[in-house]
Length: 404
Ligand code: HEM
Image: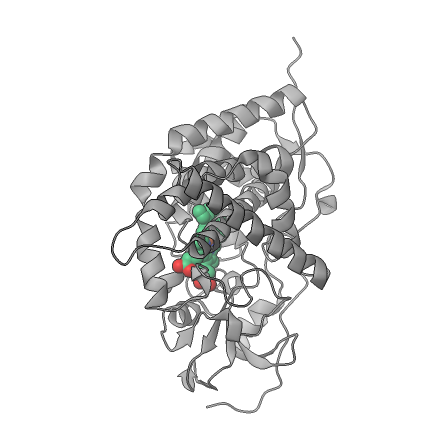
């Protein structure tokens, strides 16, 4: 059991924009369950091997109650006090009640039914990019608007409010944001959603927020506060994550032209391609957090009740024990069991939606612009090392315009 070891800090910085910081490899090889020093002074644990990460996320001796956890980075919106409806931070059976209520709205069948509308949204944004002409910032012209518009329509959130909620979300997910500014943004988001729920209660429509309000089945009735919490989580998680996968995924494909050729030659293989991009890029860069409910023996370590354990998704997704040549982007890889959407009862609720959006958006983008390229030297693309969710801040792109 535990030989005394000095705690590590979270590895950083990155040496390549697409790879996790190299320190994770050393930890995975030498100290797979390592004592971790948190910014608040607490000592917990960092788990870096694939099998251990899955075991941890499926282990009910660990809680998702982030209120009791230390954060490996500055506190963020999902990491603070009591929030009705914030199912990410709940444990069964409380979590099960919400999850059951929501799962049926996010099934593969329901998300595939959105495909025609997503195709239309993608086409409209490609038309606008083409009309504007190069150079275009992919983040503002394509990657952020598409998932934002889709989640707005699904929830019944007015898309006209996007500037506000996107700005608040960006502040809340920024690691070095001023503490007061972050709390203000978080409260603004909360207030916005509370007001919206009041409007929907008075004037219901057929989108999800109204459905949650009007669903009055036994055990299912939700308070407005709960609906606001769920709506907030879905709005933030629903636009920010997929947006970063679209922009970072495009950057990665443009920097791996031989892989892009595979996608262009075999667009029918886009499902595999998307799974491989999810694995390779693992945008939830600081992993997921759990708290030991009791003294636990895990991975040969003795973890004390109340200690925080971080499951590093980027490290697990590059574990050579699970993925041969893990540092290669290989779109032809067999569908892999990556952990980019987490694992266990909290596994991403919106994963089917994210998949459908990416499966439509990537091929459409590269079909429309066969000569697409990065418009600045690649090292000048600003990376989101400073954000809870990894990606690019901007991605200036260019292409050859056919002369009439
Ligand atoms: C949970 C990643 C897209 C809604 C999670 C978790 C991860 C994740 C890692 C698990 C967190 C944990 O165990 O603590 C991603 C990635 C996405 C994505 C990489 C895009 C590429 C979405 C979308 C939505 C969404 C589009 C909304 C429609 C949620 C919700 C949870 C969650 C509600 C909490 C589920 C629960 O606690 O039961 N996501 N997500 N996500 N995600 Fe996503």
